[in-house]
Image (cartoon, rainbow, N blue to C red; front, top):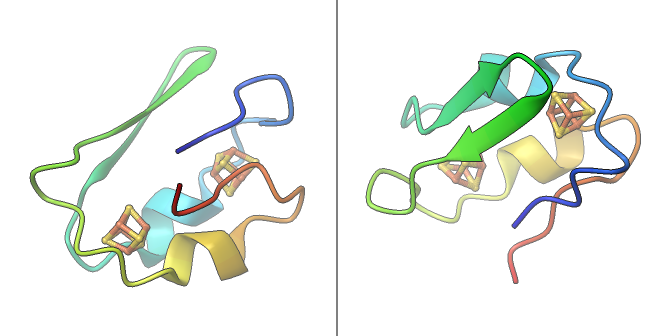
Length: 54
Ligand code: SF4
Ligand code: SF4
């Protein structure tokens, strides 16, 4: 999941997602749960800890 208030829309998470599950939109990050493999790469890539596997 994503804490939208923390996110600064840098796109780092989408850049590392091997499943292409993250869509960085204007003022919103959308994660496609059907594509996401819960690999955790995006969590490590996020500079502001806005992502979690919850
Ligand atoms: S956990 Fe992995 S597959 Fe899921 S959105 Fe993050 S980088 Fe993509
Ligand atoms: S890496 Fe973190 S701050 Fe950057 S777009 Fe993704 S969730 Fe937002």
